[in-house]
Length: 102
Image (cartoon, rainbow, N blue to C red; front, side, top):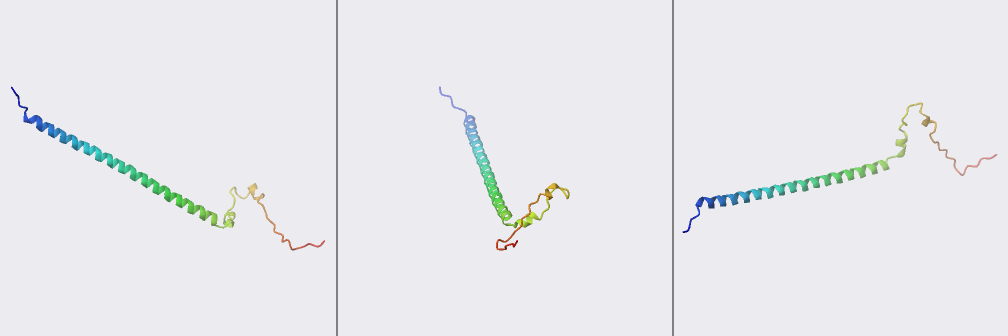
């Protein structure tokens, strides 16, 4: 005696396999989307880092090239009664070719 398998079991099996393959492809595609987002974020951070590095280099060169007298014109912090005003260095230039007679 042979018994025939019901047709409903075969259709449930094929539907179940189809559902699993769709779910698997969805999981794989969502993993690919997450990986693409992570790579995009890394690229964006790298570009921002390079832009900031270039900006910092330009600003440092600009600070080094500006005249030093501009920085000395700024009054020192501490107000008018600060003891640092009395300690400012003074430079006196005396040419070598001038001879004083005694």
